[in-house]
Length: 380
Image 1 (cartoon, rainbow, N blue to C red):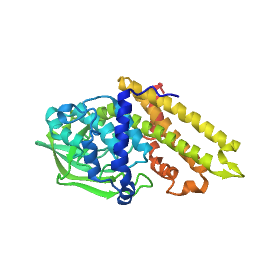
Image 2 (cartoon, rainbow, N blue to C red):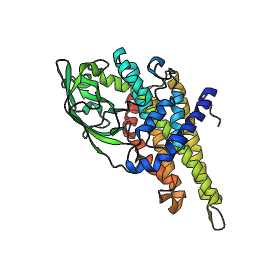
Image 3 (cartoon, helix red, strand yellow):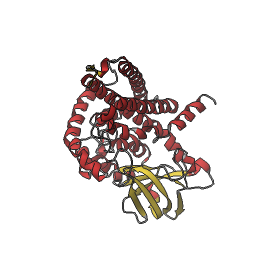
Image 4 (spheres, rainbow, N blue to C red):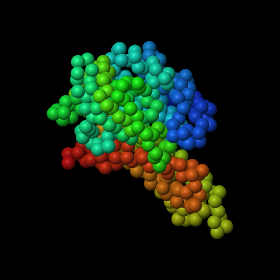
């Protein structure tokens, strides 16, 4: 079905993104996968091309266009090129809304120009060793001491954790106030007591630096408080729908990409004297996946449209996140099976997609948490 989501300016932008990705990112994938991190030069190149901070006001060096469809185009082109480590979706889709909506004028002046130039790489630190999807269970604390907060705690599974120059840290500023005692503090590279642990060894997304972060009596100036004290949980709830939609976008694009690769493989691979796609069982498998992927695409695009209009609610974002990520997992697994032994070889794109996309049902809130959100919205 023809997609009706994009305008001509989005398709023109897609060509710009595709050229950038093929020139600046694709040639370095193997090098970055081995190193476990992308280069800072790639971030600077993205900033120079105007690919960071689409929605940031022009006075701070951004695009000045609050249209999530531009984010979608960039995210889809990364998937189409097999780029799983360049952390621009985190930077553009997840972090940008916090800085745009919550930062005061002084903070915007201090952080946003570098954000848009790729000089200040960002991360958000929610997950802890003992608290994942349950954000109310965090133990990291920030105690007010004069003009500073004294921050103590540990975070884990933090994407962009090694490269990050600015980290939005979710901390408990009032231990007795429940969810009303959570605040957001921006920790900057070089602050005494802020230490990075190891670059975690994951099964996939090898070039996406994912780290443990440690905060030992870090004195964070009160001027680095993002938004109002005690409102952090509310801010997280307001911004999580876009994060979950971003994951759904990547999941839908990955399903489409892997299915296209597999269709070509089934045309070229022969068994019993004919292409394996001519075998009824395999033809039915492809037909089922094609139908599900098409349904997923239509729902994803509708969610994007609603989000651009400011109408996407928490429940439908959760639906998109869990269903598309589970579809992604199911499609990639079935496509790998259709590749036979070759699907198990890492030089085949389907094997890389199998490893890289497995996290989709986990981060941004697990499938189980998404179902809980939807169930509660139904009154149960």
